[in-house]
Amino acid sequence: MLHEILHFFGRAICHQLRERSLHVSGEALAVCARDTGIYIGIFSTLIYLHFSKRGESITIPSIKYSFLLLLFLVPLMVDGLGSYTHLFESNNPRRLLTGIAFGFVLPYFIYPLLSKESLEQKNEPVVKSSKDLFIPLLVSICFGVLFYFGQPSHLVLDSLIIVTVIGWFSLLASFLFPFIRRVRIKWALSILVSLSILSLLSLAHVWVLSFAI
Image (cartoon, rainbow, N blue to C red; front, side, top):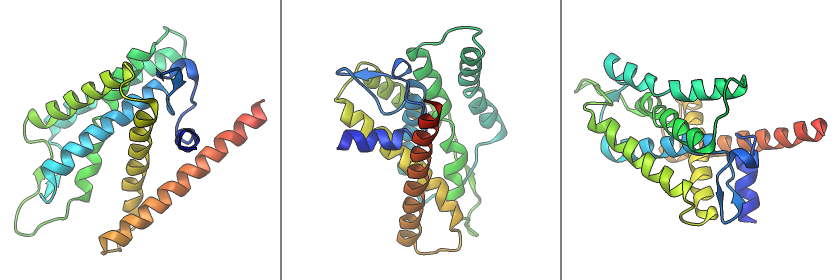
C-alpha cells in the first residue's frame, strides 16, 4: 500500500517513464531521474537553511550570488531542451545531476520569503559566503550517489522524495495564508491544500493517460 501511495503522489508531478527513472531492487522510483535530482536538491538546501538560518531576518541572495545560482539552472534547461528536440540523447546520470543542480537553487529564493521582517535589524542575504552554497550542494551530491546506487531500499528513497514534494508544495501553499498568524493552523491548511492539489494532479494524469490509450 505504501508503494502505491508514493507512486500516486509521484504521478502528480512526473511522467514516471520507467526508462527515465532510477531503479532500486528492480523497482522504478516514484519519480523520474530528473525529478529525483530536483527534489534531492530542494531537500538538501531546505534542511540546511532551516537549521542554519532559522530565526534570522534574511532576504534573497545578493546580485552576485543570484547570478551564480541562476547559472546552475542552465544545465537542466540545455539537457531537457536538447533531449526534447532530439538534438542529443540524455541519460539517467545526466538527468539526476542536472536535476540536483536545478533543485538546490530554488529554496534560496523561496525560503527567505518566510523570514519575518525585523525593525531592529536589517535583513541579511540568505547567502553570506560560499559555505552557504557548498554545503547544500555537497549534501545533494551525496544523496544523489546513494539514490543512483540504490541505497537504502526503494521505499525509503521514495518516501524521502515524496515527503519533500509534499513539503515543498506546502511551503508554496503557505503564501496563500499571509493573514493567518497562528503557525500551526497556517501549516495545517498549507499541507491540506498541498495534498489536495497533488491528488487532483495525480488523478488528472491518470485521466489524460486513459484518453491517450
